[in-house]
Length: 368
Picture 1 (cartoon, rainbow, N blue to C red):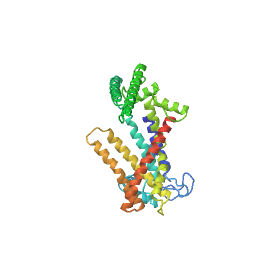
Picture 2 (picture 1 turned 90 degrees about the vertical axis):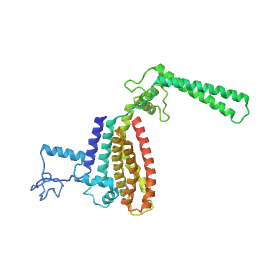
Picture 3 (picture 1 turned 45 degrees about the vertical axis):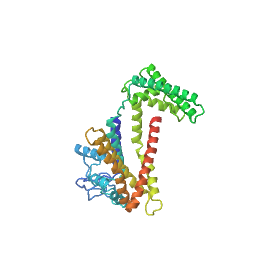
Picture 4 (picture 1 turned 180 degrees about the vertical axis):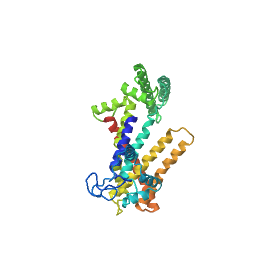
């Protein structure tokens, strides 16, 4: 997984670098452009834009790699502080044409999204421990015994006062509870009889439980044709592989968050003139970039077991509406009230967008 994530990171950096023009010092000017041959007098060719000094050192090769993958130039240090502390100014200045000093919204979005998946991929999937099968069998047998006793009591009560209001419902409920308890016990006994089907999985983990359910036929897929169901069950039989496929699909299709989000921002300004779809797109890209950075920060704090990490993670989550409010107010020149109610609606839209995205990603990851 880590190798693939590294490939995604490099790819993200290359894509981000491809949409940006190179900046920095090109070295000493030569008399003519080495590419098109046009006479030049500065550091760049006015005809084709190539630097007039072509480096051929190994050190410069490393510099190009660093710049291509990390965008390691002055613009990133001007962009990030504004993105975190004054996102409205950053978004407004890019929209109004002040762009040479900042990393473009598309470039920084691509890079941070792939960096996020790269950073989070090192943690792997933590096995959530469940009770051993033997303990669950003991509890299931006890539940069946309790359900039978409750049914016996309900039958006695029903015979003594058959016409009492609700007596028949109590009896039916007790019968249903017994059937459910017996069904759970049978499933556990069948799993015990089938033996372990989870080689290499942590005993009692959710992965082992899911794999057993798939192998025993107790897990059912309620949609799609037979071929689709077979694909999903095949992946779920190996839960870690299913999670890996979903993660891979998520960072490959992270760009879908952009077209999913822009219409909701447009709805907030439907009756206001002077704002274009491009403006909303820039807003969304910078906002998603902030969310990616925040997700990385929360993920890193979540893995730490030191004191106060949960408090820090909670404070980071509270920064979402604050950042959204500041970006809306600064970008669109809104009053406090206008920015506040739009922030509330936009938070709801974000939940809806993320839900749609996650459902689509899970389906594509399991059926692809």
